[in-house]
Image (cartoon, rainbow, N blue to C red):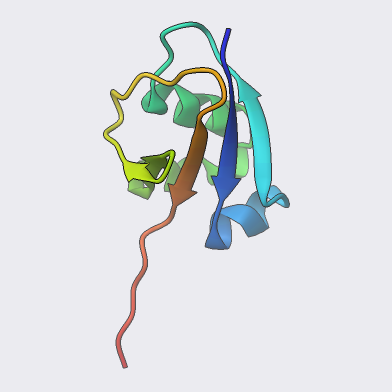
Length: 83
């Protein structure tokens, strides 16, 4: 059962109240599974989970990416900008 470290950014960090959380997952769990788990543990973030960009060990990955013990996962909300 891998445990991953999840770094939270922007509004996601504010909603959960932590900069980083640790999450234990079943063997073979994917980024999508992780997002589902975070939504179960922190229902306030559910509406935002599908809009997040995910990086594992500083490399962007799709939802089907399989996580392994010790991965550092960054969940990054979309950024809007302009003047």
